[in-house]
Length: 494
View 1 (cartoon, helix red, strand yellow):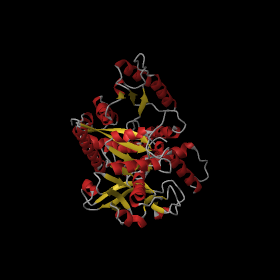
View 2: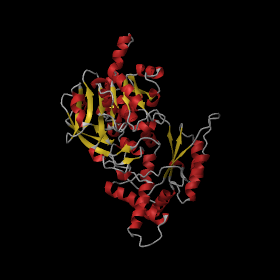
View 3: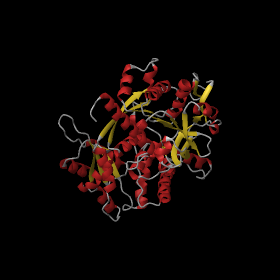
View 4: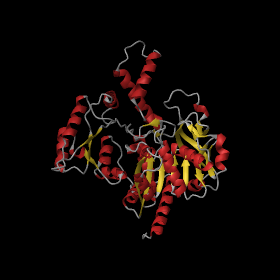
């Protein structure tokens, strides 16, 4: 509903914000770094059922708030860090967030004012007609925080452009903070520029001062190189993004970022043309508008997802990429559908399918994982987290990763059916990566195709701005080569 489900190294299904944190900080977070209301209430109810509260009335305060504080402190202790950054999401005053705000209010009393720091991020809209900064929404959100007992120490104004001095003074006055504690997080071309922008405004020094930490000059050289790559391109490509959640682009935010990481490292701007898979199912042939998108693109991605809707449309796009020799990358369900399409149109098993879509298919080339067959609860029961893959020598995937064993994160219930391995491979499909026990296929590719690769994994979750995923890097390189060859054929200048 709000975007992708990000998967941590230890198999946590968490909010997409943790993906942003991993990309910015270049650290692997865990399931413990994501605290939800459901987790808190479940834990409190279980404790009550065990009699741990000795018959007391279980209430929001102190039982729910104590559980929130306990989890924050647990993460801090296990991480062995100097500072723990806690995002309390939502909008100030939302009923869902009130127990969490109450918990952090209590923490300031318990930890002391010099060991805690409240940073409030709020929107400052700009009137389109007059260009005037409207600080009233921010003022009201600060008033709501103060009403429940939280006085912000720092204000970060989210705005289209930097605040003027008059607006900063007004925000400082009505928020009861020093003017030097008001900062602007304004719209930028490259999101990775924001840490440097905030530091230039003095936010790093101010935070260190308030928390009595030794302030040192940060070394932005590596980060600046990343940002410079995002701002200057020598090449440009277009990638068709075929999925069924395309109305909300955040459904694929890690994939989008992984493509940008790969493009930036190659000085290549990656333009994305979104293709809604369900629209391709309305008639047998690919619609004219979709055909135009496919023809102008230099590569095709078939994106992950679940369920029947859009699956036949995705397979039409996969067939197009296979037959037209357009660089192709399939992720998770994209790999499973690539196997189904190949079985139908190359092997000749016309009714081939995955049991997820058709449980009674005569040719289940993709089947439920054996360990999933007795699973009834849907939450957190898939094959999740980082798993080892053994890569086959002399394959495209081995060439991209450059080593025989890799670890990528997973989130799936189905796999390529071992009963069909032989027939698929005998028709030139290459299984280029297996699980460590060789019981399941992790990567496939096709011979006699410039780049047709798919994986059961989600390599995008481990891609970083300065260290792109090898698979995405290889895909963008292939798209760039395809683009150059296409221009050459069309007679256009490079």
